[in-house]
Length: 87
Image (cartoon, rainbow, N blue to C red; front, side):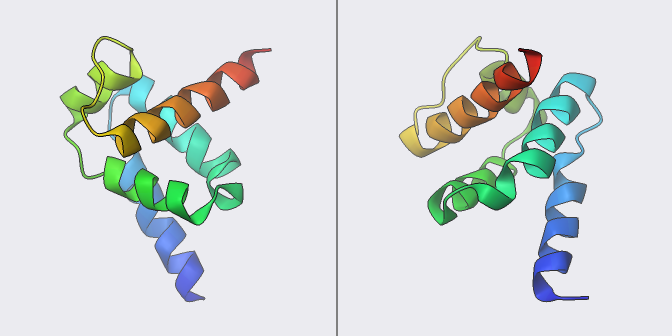
């Protein structure tokens, strides 16, 4: 198993939040868009996973916005990815 495989499995585990809405959005992005994302956006995704579930939920449901523009960028990418899957 390569270091990349181990990292992906770690990200997968941390993307599973136990809340259906978060799982669908985070795992969908990880499985379908993360590998093709720019390295800076991959870093942003890893940072995002450090946030609390209730905060992530609020951001991803567009109830609030993060103060950090880097986190807002990855939120926007995740939501755009989810929206593209609905079409």
